[in-house]
Amino acid sequence: MSRIAVVPGSFDPVTLGHLDVIERAAGLFDELHVLVVHNPGKTALLPIAQRVSLIQESVATAGFAGNIVVTSWSVGLLVDYCTDVGASVLVKGIRSQIDVAYETPMAIVNRNLAGVETIFLLPDPAHAHVSSSLVRQVASLGGDVSPYVPPAVAKLLENNRV
Ligand code: PNS
Image (cartoon, rainbow, N blue to C red; front, top):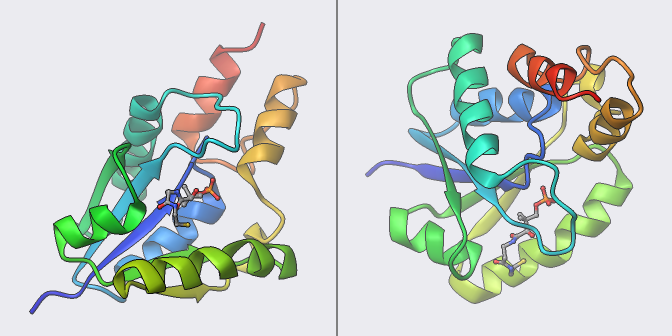
């Protein structure tokens, strides 16, 4: 039986920290789904379809394994997607105690809802300070985000500067 896992998130935009987690999670499972999910608690910068294509392009450019599926989910619970595709594990990156506090309730609720377990991967320390919100802020103020994001994202944010 295939071991299928899901890496969910807003990915607004995808960062090098996300790609690090995606690459390592892909090595642990037969199939890894990178799932872009709308987070109603956040104001979005990029449309969901664009976030999906940026991740697809970045995964291909980085030459990651061929067991990665990139898609989005907007109907119902995250665990409904997991059930639909036969995934029993969620993978999240944890950078700090703040992330632990944010992720723990969601992990417990997802396990209670559908028996879906969550595993946490520690980031490469090189990316431990990187977040999408920081990237959005630096980009909006005209700063260089290329050390924090894949080339496709850096190019998009650079071209969108006013
Ligand atoms: O990258 P983010 O914004 O921290 O990702 C959060 C996300 C999208 C994974 C989270 O908001 C989520 O799981 N949303 C799906 C809705 C859901 O299933 N909620 C109930 C269980 S937490």
